[in-house]
Length: 451
Image (cartoon, rainbow, N blue to C red; front, side, top):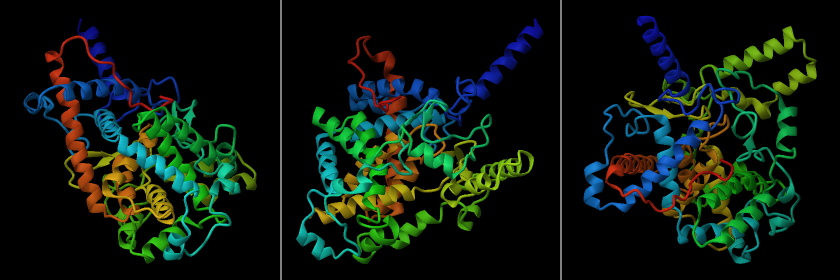
């Protein structure tokens, strides 16, 4: 009997650690590489949607009486969540519902037209006096509009990993150094998406309804990331950082000091490394695994020099920072936060600054703080997965706020409020379930289209 109980305890412990570890959102037995698929997130999201609906259906008095988790060990997401999976699905659903509105729909409809360049106003351009002008203000006529780029697999399902994007690193799939040639062929291959396809997809979804649905948010996030490469093409408005963002600095519409705060969180800046191995963004094992992989391919497998050169190409250098696990100790040392291994999102900063630039060229006002939240929701819809090339909600928020001309501090304030409200919704809805009649209205999914 003791042997049976011991075996049962061992099996339970193994399953808990391998498939249900509280700081992980992935599972070893995911029918893919192991620790790479979205299976756990996909299974958990419907409960978050149901909890949201239940919580919203109750009175404020009932909400306040039931909005805390009965589990006192809340160590994730600003110390409001019991597990990292709870944090991820709760914040995703809460933020998605927050921007599912007519105002957000109108905002993104207008933003698409601004990005396309069909509404550019000559007087606005003359007043702004940009460093570079495109050959044609209508960017739908440019070569880059219908050309795949390095972001073309963002938001695209990866059947091998069970998540999204180009690749994922895990304990069972530690080596991801395929080289620039492989990356180029993959992103420009049949699965890659062009800026034109992004525009057409989003416009079709916006025509279906008058609010910004979860599906439209995903499409909008994909557009912001992929279209930015076309907007900032040399043929068009010029490099996102050295031209577009620099012009915004010049007009006081963005702060270089705030942008530098984002930059210095990225690997391998010393400021980030000085945070210590547990708190830093830079992956501890990723670079070691990359160097081991390259050495193995060069000296043991004796790959040809061109292959090794491709693997060492600077265009794919950031892949070495793809982490094995996506969590880190928070700055206070009393809990854990989601972590991409890539630092705060300069990609989100660039995408937001390009959109702000497009709005200004169209005679519009810069993005307000509330409008920035819509962009955060859209980008989070695309990045909220188990993929290796992603950004966390807090990283996205910092990038978007700074890209729109606001501050990292404002982004962090927004993030803290969001975590608190999402946790109250998630655990409040769960605690209120016994009080709810069996018949519930139909749950509208906040999952991505391909989830």
